Length: 433
Image (spheres, rainbow, N blue to C red):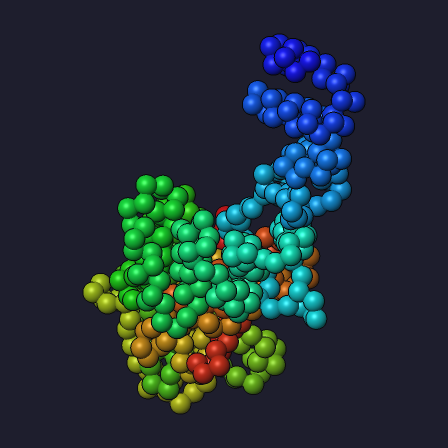
């Protein structure tokens, strides 16, 4: 029989007919070896590996039991190790971008409001729950999903447990290291991590690390640039830089004006009763619409120097001791600020839903400034929209969320709050597109 099997085309034979002979261990070992050399697996014959306690054959047999495997889950054992990625039961997914509406947990339980990401995260947790211990690759995957939830401290602690030499995805490890460095007050170490990838042959990863370098350059005041033309965040940042915009603050002596892409602005002065105005409208900084049909007591066109981005405009002596709403208009936009001081400058680029916070005195970008946004819907309802913190470049996207409102948004009310730089409230229109 063995001579016949060795001579014939084994794939054309009904091997089930010799299954009863597999009870003989010698026959079992000879046949399975012969068939393995022909790269042929036969389920019934290999099942006798369980009877003979033959580890290698039993392992091969169990790998082919899809029904058993699907009911068991991704276990690791001496006889059977189930790789959920290899069997297409689990796939590591990248979310780019994933914008969370809330920076902090609402109540005692953290919620993931994006349904698909919620399913993916719990699929990961179930997969990891079958492991006796988590290896460094498992922990690194967990770090990524924690970062997607803005759970920075937990991700930092988990990442500290990962040893770079033990993971196959060393480049992804390095990017996580760069990303976490950006949450430090001095992220310069990220530059040394990203620099070796400047000439990486894969465009996607070369651009990813180049974006880290570009962000560090912008933090250091060297200006921003688009590294990847297909990156939405970088495109938005570049377009926002070309939009005509201006902002200003008022101290006890002057109006401090900052701008981009403008030649001149018009300054209007409206004396006001602060108590009465605030009683009728708590958002007193947005009181300019109440003066839209009133002629200002004074108006002045201010020419902006081309070689500067800041200008101090003295308050006219006749208004120096009065409660005045100062309105500045240019490029179809207007801003109004009452007489109070703040130590930070908040710049809004409404067409792209971005704001940028800088220190008024030093001009340095302010990171980790808390921003909370409410939306006024077309039906008149006011709802929480999102909150979070500015990045190290002082920027914050106050519009984008992955759970958009079904009802059109008419206005945003934005609170910018710093522990040591004061606060500002601004109502802004949603982006035109």
